Image 1 (cartoon, rainbow, N blue to C red):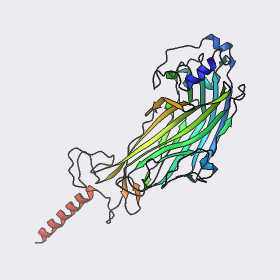
Image 2 (image 1 turned 180 degrees about the horizontal axis):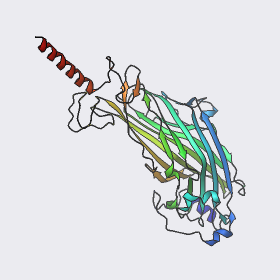
Image 3 (image 1 turned 60 degrees about the vertical axis):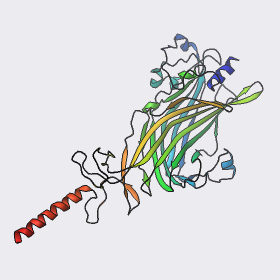
Image 4 (image 1 turned 90 degrees about the horizontal axis):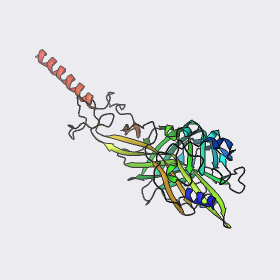
Length: 392
């Protein structure tokens, strides 16, 4: 019964003190850890490469799409451009005297974990990552005719079953996904993505009887690098969020039936808000004294542009636990990562139909577009007028 209580607490059937991780009191595991047996572990290496259309899924309407019972929106196509996910996931679980009196291995007592004072004498489940990196670059063609433009790309095609030694019958079902959504007001084709590097030893630890103590040490040092944004149009208003979402399921025999417990972790999720700014400098800053006239110069801001596309990216994490049809989210961070993602500004090139760095466009006379061209023309006109006066 204790085992069932622990699992139900992990799945959210016990009260949750907080929806976010709270600082733990320093609870030293004590000398008893040294006397306990090593906790059972299972691991799987992932090396996935995708360089083709991924949404709608290949074979839409066949077993491939029906396997996950997905609703496929119309007029919404997504392709991966050289996407890959590589790394090792290590799974383990333990407690003191209930399931087997198991102590965590070095994979779950690394430098990141030791800073958290996590109490391994309680019921716990963990996932640790090694050598993890990902390149996610999506090419999207969308017409905003759907109520929801959501996608779930199952990167393995079908889930992988991972056996845990010493726990016969308690296999873990592993289904890595790319999950996200797009909101846009007009028909659009665009490309965007990110590179991800997770530090070795980044670990997700679930405290079964105390869900408010769930922690994810090490993930805050994940390095995320946004990839260049491109669009075939200017005047874009767009919101996009994409997550690398490992999905884990565990089927447990309870009272003559099998109950499914699940974990979904967005590690990480990233998004961008794309909007338009007018009469702004190359960093999308709009001086307070600028009028509506285009190409206005300012001694404090320098060259101003009549219209720029502003990209405001963000990175976060989320964790959802479930049992059968019940679910809750004990961890949800919008900005937990150390490296802040900078705002980016781009200028639209109508000839090439691409976005470029502000000021890189050339006018017909070979000069850069922008206000300084007007100033040079005025100086040239003054010189010519003075020359005419001297001749007279």
